[in-house]
Structures are given as C-alpha cells and as structure tokens.
Length: 481
Ligand code: NAD
Image (cartoon, rainbow, N blue to C red; front, side, top):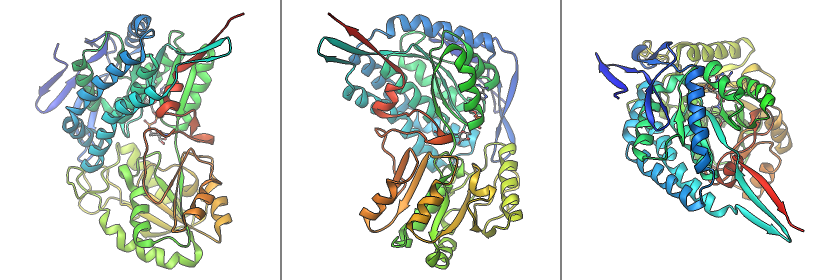
C-alpha cells in the first residue's frame, strides 16, 4: 500500500503503522502540515483516533508475549538493525525536518545523526547493565514492564522517537509511539526505515494523532504499562494524573529555563559565542536551551560588547541555507507566543540589546522571529521564569558565586545548566550546587550514556544509558529457602 501520494507537490498521508504494516486510518480527521518558512501547505495527514490506538496497543501486546522473553543478544541485534536502517536515510530525514518543522539544515542533520546513534548507545548500555543479580539465596531479575506508550513533541521528533524506542527495545518492551501530529512527514520517513528493518510484527507501532485523543488513550488504556513522554509541563501533569488510574510507570521529560553561569574568570572570546549557540540552538525551540545568561556585574559592559559582536554569526533565515543559525518557529501559534514574551519583557522593563518584536526584514512570509537578547533582566521577570521556546536570551547580572548559584536555582525548572570558567575546580564546585539533571562545564556537551532528565518541574525519571533502560524495567526477586 502506498502511503505517501505525490499530488501537486502536496503529500498525502492516510496510514498508520500497526502490526508490521501500513494500514489505513480509522480516524477521519485531516490536518494540514504547513512549511513554517513560507506558510504554505505541504501535506495533508489523516489523524488516528482511539480505535487506531487500541489496534496498535493490541498488536504491541501480542508482540510482547515473545519479545518480552528475548535475550540481551536478540535485543542488541534489533538495535543494530535499527541503527543501520535509520543511518541510510539521514539526508531524507533531515530534509523532512527542514521542510515541515523549519529546523536549520545544520542542526537537523546533527540531531538526525544523533537519532541514529541512540540505537548503538542503547546497545552499549544494555551490554553494561546486569539483568540478573544474585545475593545469597535471592535472585533479582530485571523484567520488561510490558507495552510502552512513547509520546514525543515536535521540536526534535525523529530523535525522541529513536531514543525512546532504543531504551524500550533494550529493556525488552514493545511500543506504541504517538509522535507529534506536527511531525508527520518526518515520522513517515522514519517509518519507512522501521519497515525496512523487518522487525517482528507489532514490536513497534506508530499512530499519529492528536494528544488528547491518541495520547490520552495510551495513558488510560490498562494494556499499556508504561508512558515515556517528552513535552510540556501542563501535558506532563495531565499524564501523571490520568495514568494513576492504571498505575502507569511514567517518565516525563518536560521544559526548562536553563541558567548559563559565566564565572568571572571566563574567556569571553569562547564563552559568548558558546552562550549564543546554547541559547539559540534548534532556533531556541530546545528544552535544554541556556536562556538565562548569568553574568558577573563587573563584566557586564564587556559581555554586552561581546554579544553584539558575536550575534552576527547567528542570523535568522532560510533553514535550508547552511549559514542560517535560526530558522522559523514551528507554527504561527508558536511565533505569536514568542512575540508575546518579547513584548512582555519590554513591558516589564528589560532592555532589548539586539532583536526585538516583529519579523526579521525580508522574512515576513514565514514564522521567523528576530534572535533577541535582553539585558537589565531581573530573575523575577516573566521572561526569566517562563519557558519561551524561541530564540530569546535574558542577561542577568550577579554579584558573586553564591549569588549566581542562588539565581540559577531560583526557578521552577531544573533540566540543564551550563558553566563557563577557567578555574575548573571552581566551576566544579559551582556545578555541584546546581539543581539540574545535567550541568555542562565549558561547552555545549552531550553524552548519550549520561542520564538525561530534570529536577523539579522539568520532569520525573531519566532517559539514556542504563538509567534510560532501567525506566522500562521492573525488578523481580526470587527468594529460596
Ligand atoms: P506538548 O506537551 O504540547 O505535546 C507533546 C506531545 O504530547 C505531543 O505529541 C502531543 O500531541 C501530546 N499530547 C498533548 N496532549 C496530550 C494528552 N492529554 N495526553 C497525552 N499526550 C498528549 O509539547 P510540544 O508543544 O509538542 O513540545 C514543546 C514542549 O516540549 C516544551 O515545553 C518543551 O520544553 C518540551 N520538551 C521537553 C524536552 C525534554 O527532554 N525535557 C525535550 C523537548 C521538548
């Protein structure tokens, strides 16, 4: 069955992936996919409904009967195969992310490559994780929890699909994925990879539909044992509340308002371009964006000059152009949300150092915003407390290290933090006092074996590495007399 029909350059997707096959949607609602660079409709997608979700859950349940009993080596084989098939379509996945989401081509390629690597990272972590341990006469085995519901956001869809599936498969779980409905083209290319992998039927099922329809069915269905969700705090709270009825195991990766502390011995030539890259990565639509730059008051003027010089390397523009650093916002709604925060920042007395309200010149046709840096921000302002999810950086002055730590932790979030400084011991001392799931010293760093997740409102549980696999496992102890 052909699921994408080229028709006057508008693609049509009418199928979901259930039980190892592309099947026509039971749901009838059709949604337009819009290219955010030019506001043109590029695809029409038929969304799944609860019945599609239930069929996918049933298929995953049947597949779990066998897959739940597989050995480490059998799961490793699946992970290697998934790596192989996703790796063959890096360029197509990148192109879909650029067209449908507006991700810059440079960032999109990096994130898709990272997506492919998640399968090998999970294989490595699985190898290191003992699934059976004996203590005296007691044997503890780590058992897969069952069918996992994996729910992803639009800002790095293929990465989250891959990372969540990798951990689930490593644990021996089968999956029903509910990707963001805004990411249907990327999901479709990713599904071609999945289909080409020739995995056991029902091991991974994908139903693209609305969150409050398909996502809600996954959360309430008693045959789903686990939900792994990446998205907003508000939806995370709904999932936690509604999942309680069936005692779901729940992992939540939510938002952030990450601090980036510039210690007073930081080398600004390196630290400022890095700070802008951290703030504007993925066009600012990144949960780990470092959006609060904490600067020693004594170096504030120097920092402002350095930002004005470095910002020239972060132009907004056509995401297909490799020189573009900031693409459009994903939707008109997201564009308006970012605009309203810029407006609010001005209203609350922050000063626009660069950027500001409206479209960048010449980019009026899409959902582009100006990469914006605010100075004279205090940490109690709305723009310093709420997640904007756009290219907006707040510069906040501090008096000394203790003050910087206090401001960094004065947030309801705790996903990520960044520190720049020359004295490594001092940077480590500061890092050890930050309430965040990850703290990166001197750079925009990643380690797929390190746990990823948040303190406070940034979430519950961890992904990646052995921690990520552990989130899909349940210990069983057998005690002998
Ligand atoms: P969102 O919460 O609106 O949606 C995320 C997913 O949840 C989508 O697939 C959506 O359809 C689904 N959903 C919506 N309502 C649901 C419901 N009632 N039940 C089940 N599922 C439901 O988030 P978004 O707008 O797609 O993404 C942006 C948000 O995601 C930001 O707040 C950002 O910080 C967060 N995010 C977090 C991380 C992280 O790892 N911590 C990473 C990326 C994005």
